[in-house]
Image (tube, rainbow, N blue to C red; front, side, top):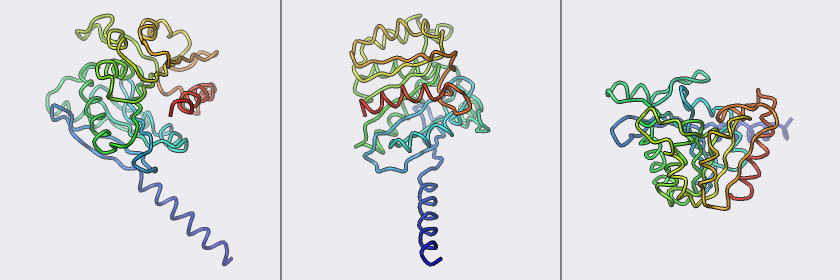
Length: 249
């Protein structure tokens, strides 16, 4: 019993320490909208950092299962609420509420500044860490566009189900593709089976040889929820993603 007790105390301390490394924070976007984010940072500040953006109609709750798994792979993470979204996994999108309170638009394209502000937050607070920008559905298109417009802003980009989702919001049919022409960092694109045509032009426009795509043999899922364990084919997505991360980061 004397030998077991210290082990239990140590285990309890480790669990407490891990819990202390996960917290909800806020910071402002360029137009004073308050962005709410969950930090998953159990590792040192120099550790490669993955910035997680959610899909349409959702919130940072898209990553409540995924972010801890990325931590176990050795990465720090932050999942944000963009102003274009709502609720998922019982997590309400607080950034949208802030935007509405200030009378701001909450279309897909209006979330662009939230992504930029979040990238700046990470680069300011974790200056020694390599940064991977990760998008889901509409936010993946914006992520690719940003990484093309600002080639030095990140060290890698991961896009789940990207597409040209912004034509009804004042953008051209090749809005993302135009930005993708300037991407010079490692890229990983994946989607559900049958969604490839949505990003074929985008993928082909990326000039770097270090670009990878994955589509499952099964029907798959739209967006980053493809990694959720409740889906039978999530394992195939994880294998492809881990290979990309292992090779590049």
